[in-house]
Image (cartoon, rainbow, N blue to C red; front, side, top):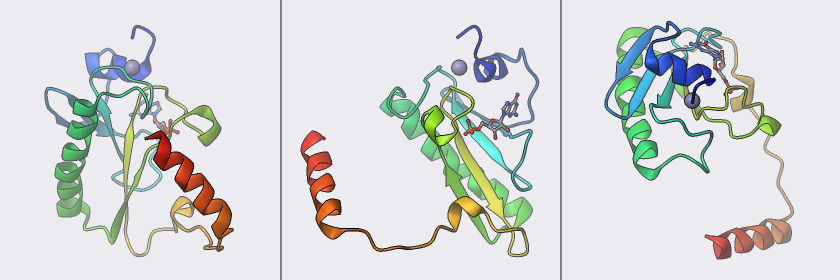
Length: 138
Ligand code: 5GP
Ligand code: ZN
């Protein structure tokens, strides 16, 4: 896509700090890191979100995520790595080219707020009803 900032990164028209590349996938440092080592993995073929991306590209991203997480562990020795992927402006997807965040956190880093939600039991009847509808739709 001509105007897409991540397509431009794949084409080398915008500089990036590349950490990994294969025939389907490109991975690079996020320039607004939530924590040190924050890395983005994207498909080389433009797809906006989880609904659009091909199964092959999705598989390639997840395989790459394991390799890259290994590199991050070797270099930064984090206590954990959060994987985050946003779909749609309603959940604050800002760049409309699918991207998978790897966010390592050391034990003494600040809490990642998006990983620390409060567990509040839901309405089981409602959970059951929606689950059954989703299951029937797949
Ligand atoms: P989203 O909220 O869409 O999941 O996150 C988009 C991410 O892309 C943000 O973390 C933001 O810092 C990152 N980002 C936006 N523009 C650029 C860019 O030009 N280069 C790099 N490396 N990261 C970017
Ligand atoms: Zn794109």
